[in-house]
Image 1: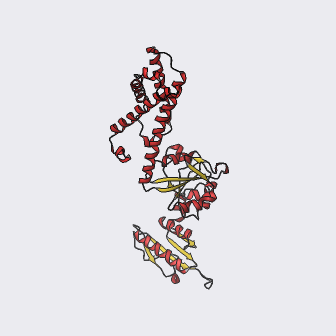
Image 2: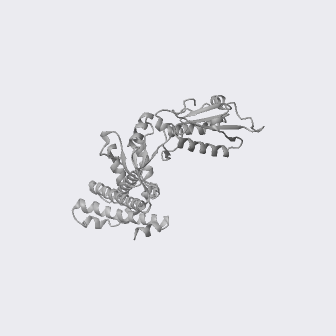
Image 3: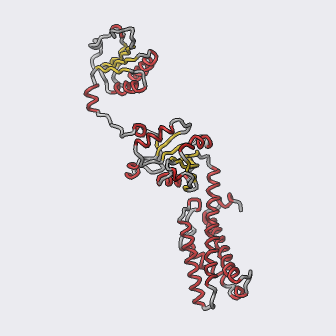
Length: 376
């Protein structure tokens, strides 16, 4: 039967096939227990207890069902599957021994029971692990998943890799860790690499993501890692912080974009709204270097606080023009303020006399700084 046909069967039919496979494994294990111990492919003793084959199938299959061996979905089964198999086989063999003693069928070499146990664990366990591997490989091959490099091979990184094994979007391909003792080791089937190998890993896996699995790292350490990753052609996402994980605000597989706190190397400070309103609203404010990235952002935030006058001081004519146009468009979209177009040559620092009653006017004044105009 092809794998596609097996997967398309209803769950009841798939379980029936697993039961049939286990029954065959039990028959092979019973035969092996006698054949290997007595050194004959069909010992005479086995001929006298041929009834043992169907009895073993009934007892062991029912034991497997009782311990829950047919409940897990194989593709998502974890290490607990092996525990369930060992438990089921051990309990079934013990029941077989009890039935054998109860029926007084004579002595059986004790090693035969051990051989039967080993063969059955190998057949049932090996068969399920092989089928699980095939199903996972087929799933990974059928889904277009983005390759993921996990930075951090600790507990958080291992949990993340285990969660991504079942993801339809991401496929973990390697670990990267700063600890030299971990280099070359394997975690969940993924090799741990040194940080200096990151450029080659990114080049090998085109379109890869780098996930920072460093929830307990200090801000300074996170900043150092981000600075090292800045030049790589890969998108960098971060796991939630330890505080977010312990509070339950986020799960370990909820990624986020790198924010300002990661780059600052310290906790961000929230603005004091009362202080800003008292110092900015209704007052004249000048921003030097208004055309730069920081200056422009300051102008945007100051504008929202409704100053009386905002003076944009900048040495670059082009950037001054650009930020002025952006802020005028921003003013036009605000509900109440009405931008005033003023001529800096005839600047009236006392305000505009023609402001309409009932409106709030914000004077937006571009001022080009130059060493040729000393009186400015």
